Length: 177
Image 1 (cartoon, rainbow, N blue to C red):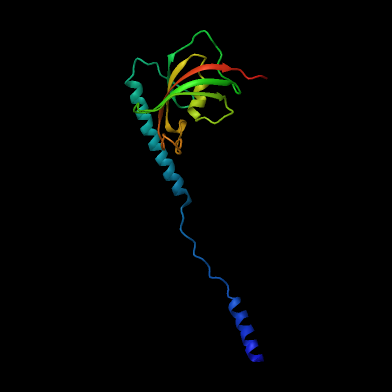
Image 2 (image 1 turned 90 degrees about the vertical axis):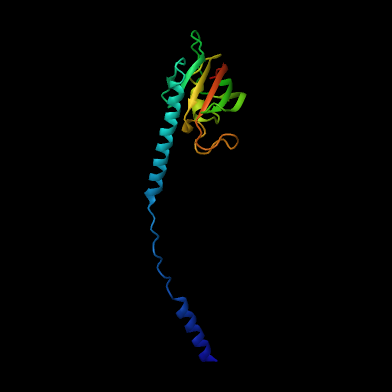
């Protein structure tokens, strides 16, 4: 019995001391995914730029302006006298329509109020509102990265969809300092 206990103890020690086998590293090229993604985004951007250029050239009666932020717009209604534009923290009330690049309406006559740079709003619209004065209406063409990008809006706008938005800035309520 004593020998059995010794053999049992030694066998436990022997088998428990076995070191784990070394794992063979998997061959992963970490940069390849990023390179492929960058290449996909370049191609997508080129395609969207061509689509936008086609819209602009097919509407020579519109005076399109290229924004510093990477989208295009023209004024449907321009106010020459007023110089007030929304600033950080101001509350704006506006209406907008959203269409896809082919002109199919997605959202129509949406009324919204928004605190400039303090609430969530897709990048292009957030930047576009800052260009408008009260009662002005502009039509913006946003490439997908300035619209809802890769994620869409989880409702009617899918992945990587460039948008056309007609926006009317109704009022600006300036922030109280």
